Length: 197
Image 1 (cartoon, rainbow, N blue to C red):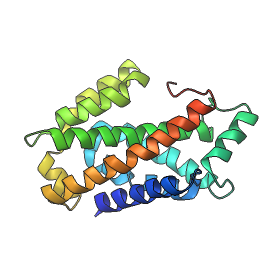
Image 2: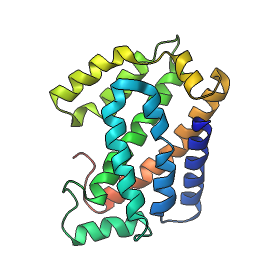
Image 3: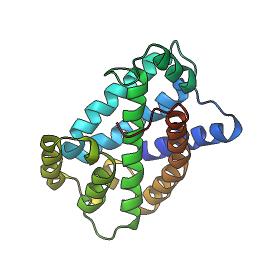
Image 4: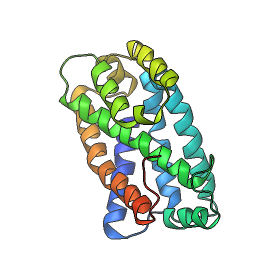
């Protein structure tokens, strides 16, 4: 049940943030790996996002072997003057956060939507979160891929959930993820790095 594992992992992260001020890289990157199967279930439209997301999460997981907290990780990149360079942990963290945000918006849209099509929820999530940072070619490819999305029912089967259990897990993820995304946004803004790049 990938949806349940994902929701529980983010609930644990949110609970940790409520009880302490620093987020550790290892549990964060582990929770993020649990989101990857969802991208896979969405098919070709989100293939590029899946590949990019998996690579960036892999980098953070590798970083967690030598760096304890997200604070320290970002501060090291700032000191090395490599925050915005391709491959920096901080840049990868921003990309991973966008992946989490896209899934959050997708779930909100699925919960609110009627019918069996995922095209509108997925299009809204993509347009809101990823489109501003993608060039014309990627936006065009994603738009074409939207026609190959699974139906809502097919997605539930792939995730091994029924409508009621899926809705519950999606709501749990949305609530917990909000806390995690907000925390990461504050890490960037408190260091004057911004989040729109």
